[in-house]
Image (cartoon, rainbow, N blue to C red):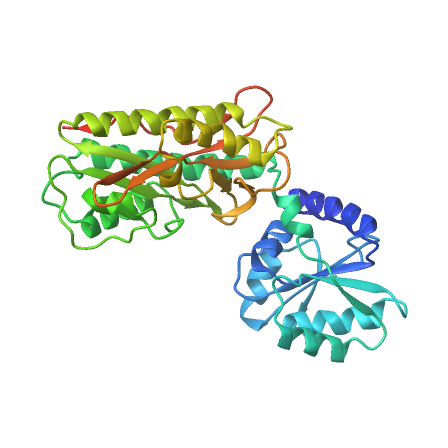
Length: 365
């Protein structure tokens, strides 16, 4: 889809002008994929401020054919190291004193020194986050990929529950592998991250890694997982009880569910990200569990499973239409168990569009 990538590069050029940059050297592979469609493991991109006619994509010989197919609308160089080749390209193309930005958050000190040695006529300037800020607002192509990733995860969980795959006697590791395999059956390229299955007291550990611990009747079981489709990630958490819940489990779950609903309803265009976090956090704090909600409310999701914006008390910025974010409050009672409920959603005018549609029923018989 060269048209969508060209459109994204045009939007980036507007930002280059505002930043007083003549060109931008893009070295982060996620950003390169966003701007070109390239999916290989080595590449660099030089985006010129005056148009794609002078922009250059570079990769190495392993990806000659792949880059021809995936990046048909840009001039290509086959050279390694690719980023250094494009610094030299900028030096030969641009006038003396031209300013070339680089992604300082992705470039090591060693790489910068190498670039600086090669830049004889152009000036290198740090330009962090230019592409990432573009990526915060999703276009229709991205939202469809996110929706497909969420559907793969939804269908995998439904299969797991319908088949009795979540039952006493299985281990956390077995359930995690089962869930990942089912996501693959529904089109997931890979797990979005290391799947979390946390049973019993382990559910009170926010990012517990699955072990050979055996699921038991009456356990909270926390499942945090996601799929990847066309490079885009889904992220969802469900917490269930195996069998009949105790009263404290019902109450804790209802509290987190209420906090999540408050956070979802607050996720509107123009809202400060910190105020969205506060909408959910205040529900939990007023119930006396503020210290047991130990992380931010959510995060952006897209080509990275964790990307801007950050929904947190210390988060900065406002939500915009078509941002894709998670809302995932949790309460964790050490030694007893914990609850987290998480959905991936798209910010819309009015009510957000929730992409993860799996059941939120507490009980699995």
